[in-house]
Length: 313
Image (cartoon, rainbow, N blue to C red; front, side):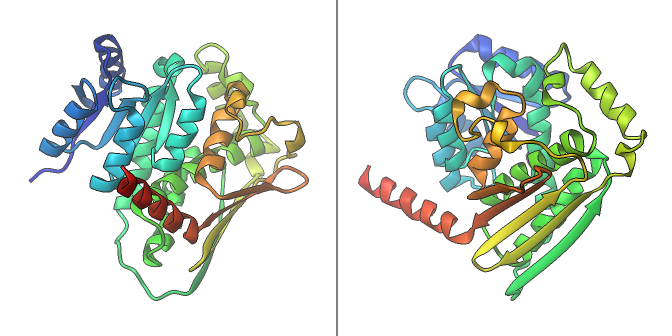
């Protein structure tokens, strides 16, 4: 039997469904649609998709309900949520509960397809690794990469391979770790080594932003800079240290990345997701080295909390 080959979009609005379908089909995906969560669950049971894109707020069961249901029935199926203005708090809760990512509805035209590509790339890299749990107590890995964004999915797959070999975390949690790594690595390359501001990305269609990335990849001093990634995994926690060779930045001037009100700030969405998916996030004083920690116990506690919630319903 052939594996999943399509994306399922879920919304109570036919207009919104059609918009998402067109955007994804233009990016080369086969797309099917469902009106509401119940119809989506029936469609998934009959023909599992590669990925689900769902509206957060719908009559009856919400996108958050869908995330929680699929976490129990289809834990390897990633869900990307679309959010209306003012629903950032709910989006944060959804990320903590298992959503792979989110896209504000106002940014659908520019952000939906890239986010879907990002999630599917990380998921495919994860599935390509043999899921063989070893008896490793502790593991360390150090990588040094140049400024080619195209290598990032392979780097994430290499890091996640160690988590799989140690049998750490569920596939859903590894997907979220992969999303945090993706944001952190791209930040280190583009904003750290190449010194390109997030604000430039929001100008026009982003052409100037992409052109400057291409120029600086081959211009000194940017071209000689590297990103160092260190993974330290034990049975209790996994720590990722990501350091670039750029001038750094004053992290104290950045708004609280856990505050949804700062999502509108340059780079706010990426930092928001990193903090949502990881337990500890710390920058060095210079601002060019990030340490992210995920505790094994935190996933167990989330599962216990979910079980208690289910029993009380």
